[in-house]
Length: 266
Image (cartoon, rainbow, N blue to C red):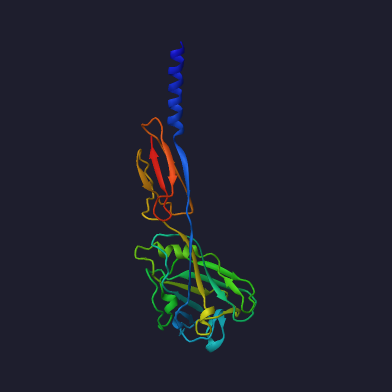
């Protein structure tokens, strides 16, 4: 009777192990932030409502510009040499401006990116910015600005993500940001451009996570170790011990860069 009891107990224990050997492993990966400022005089430009391009402005009017009847205009910003790997997961991104004067009044802008593998120098062709293929857009309703203070756009990670997801994107490529006035009024915010102050020109700030090689659907193998790439700050993997009486998983820091190893064993 005692032997039968031990036998059934072991069977139940085996079933318990098989069922509960499916469990979750969560990995947390470090983030990297890169900051790139406008680097050349012709990399921050204005396009008038008429389509005429302006490369020699002493500042950037975000919204309405009454100079030369430019009116409700579009601004182009080319950020060069961004160290963001292809396929990185963008967790936050924004453009930072420094106010060149104080102003208030309702201003609404639409921010998108040039949907290309690497942004190129702006052209003086009429409606050059309007005619560029664009990414998804993010709208921005601006608060009042005070002179010399810095102001950030809303999070434009969806814009940057669309660009770095392109097959032709590579670390060191350029990104162009297009900012269109959609206010329909004569209000504006004035920001420093490169011509007026190179040290206070616009900056693109991007935070991302990455690991390589990327394995979108991890496969857990008994007695094997593999690098796992989550592509996000935290990812939960589920391991199943089909055909085994039990499995043990551990995470070590012996992987490459930010890639921990997931070690499987019986």
